[in-house]
Image 1 (cartoon, protein in one colour):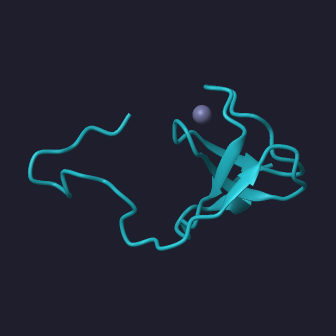
Image 2: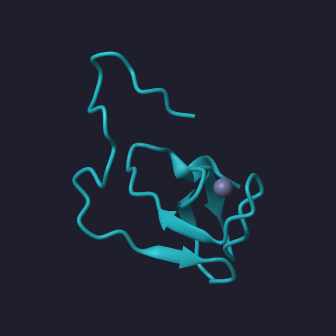
Image 3: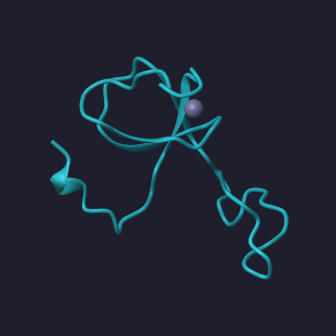
Length: 74
Ligand SMILES: [Zn+2]
């Protein structure tokens, strides 16, 4: 989990700079990086969004990180 680092980042993590977060439900055919809306688990979806294997959440937020080398995901 994310520990609120001392003097490193805001104490309250609200919606940071994102103004609009779109959630994707399990079962949607898509691909890419997704973050669990509940626990923040990261998955690489190849075909269909699953349920979170950690907490069972069905909603996902598309990860917008561009630094990850997703090309290595098989
Ligand atoms: Zn989860």
